[in-house]
Image 1 (cartoon, helix red, strand yellow):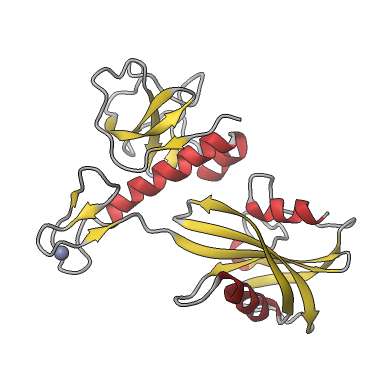
Image 2 (spheres, helix red, strand yellow):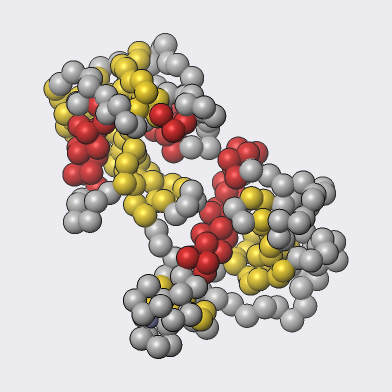
Length: 262
Ligand SMILES: [Zn+2]
């Protein structure tokens, strides 16, 4: 499978961009080219702002570029983009949008308030007044599928009810000072009233909404009855693996954790 190779620091712009490809964004939305996702230098729309090289895909240097809100061509919503493209394109999207966001979020120094500038070789914004550097923020979250015999604990989130009323796994941000396993135990107990054991890590996924790193676990039921955290969850129950409700799409780590258990 072809991978996206993300540059781990800033690279200078190639002198000749004829052989490069351009990944075009409108904030967090994707602007696809007419017959392929990526644009060539000769067919970029007017008023495109060319930003910087971000990595390589299928032998081509990929340059990030953006259009402003006056652009009236086709634009793809992020989740639609992720559902329709391969893991390599998803990795490009996740990398590029998080770099772009980090530059906006750290345009001013959080310590002294001065305007920052880009460091020459690293993906960081630097304050020349107080020497603070700001790297792209990555926020670790745990996501866990709880198993009880041949049943799975699945929940519906209040915030997803309107757009996306699927049943999914429990997830939450880690707290400072916590291990990932402690976060799994705490989040499951807080959200569902269930105590778990045998917490086992499986895999992770970058989730660029806006900068999460999802750490995927399975855990076994130990004790307790379901008592939902009603501010966050609208429903939750044990489901037999052969009678599952509607679950998340295949590009999500929640779905991969469920598929691994059935
Ligand atoms: Zn500063």
